[in-house]
Amino acid sequence: MTDVLITAGELAELVKKEPCVVIDTRNPDAYGAGHLPGAVNVHDIFTYLATSTPEGMHALKTKFADAFGAAGLSGKETAVIYEQSMNSGFGQSCRGYYLLAMLGYPKIKVLHGGFDAWKAADLPVTTDVAVPAKAGFAIVPEAGEIMIDAKAMLAAVGKPGVAILDVRDVDEWIGESSSPYGKDFCPRKGRIPGAVWLEWYRMMKPTGEGPRFKSKDEILAECATVGISQTTAVYLYCFKGARASNTFLALKNAGVKDVRMYFGSWNEWSRDPALPIDEGLPTAAVVTGKAA
Image (cartoon, rainbow, N blue to C red; front, side):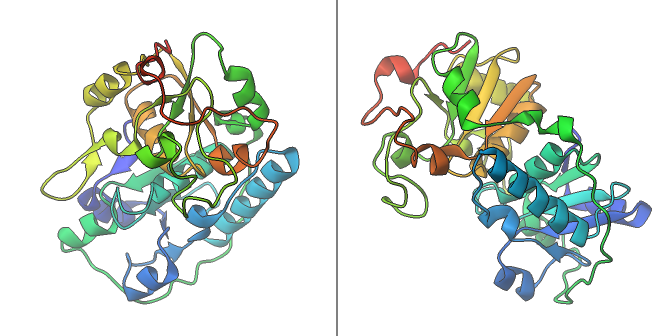
């Protein structure tokens, strides 16, 4: 698992040695202003809002199997995903990694430090738009176990041994805002009952070259503050599964064995009045909850 992250220098060598499909998750304007040579722009990786109904899951899988196939991924190539930097795109490169992993794609890398790291290494940038050869992308159904639906998340509320981990920004966690899209984008503000909170930024640290993921031990130390160890079952959520994807990658890198994500996240949960929420300031007991 530790080899998912790849440095700019390592990627420059990898593309010379084996077939790679490089996917740029940024908005089309950023892509158009300059990108990695051969990179294909798939901004939907970031923007797509999913629901966890059977129909919603089918639509999600179909959409991205088609999108990744159109980008040239057949299973033989290494998929390399990048964003601008690790903290500027709400985890969008990691969301690409998570979607590929959920679909069962065998070889996935995330460019550590993103486009900024590539530029800082003085590696080539182009404005030429890639025209990939369409490939047949196969979905591996059993890989989808890392994604849970609202029903599974509801069943986890109050369940011993399962940590519901909220990684949203603080204003969302305390119920001041419903989303990064605006305070009232969703009909309800709050959090899933019994959740513990580690803001997604805490999985990373500043370096002279921009934000990078913390070491395995540093990530486990962060997890320990909310009672999560390598043997805790962790169910992640954020607003739409992007920031939680960044945390998913961090926890897997740190050796947490059972990590799953509620990809519909707060965008879906808040819209169903039948699902319970906690509102207002959390109590101290929740913030320091012993999930393990």
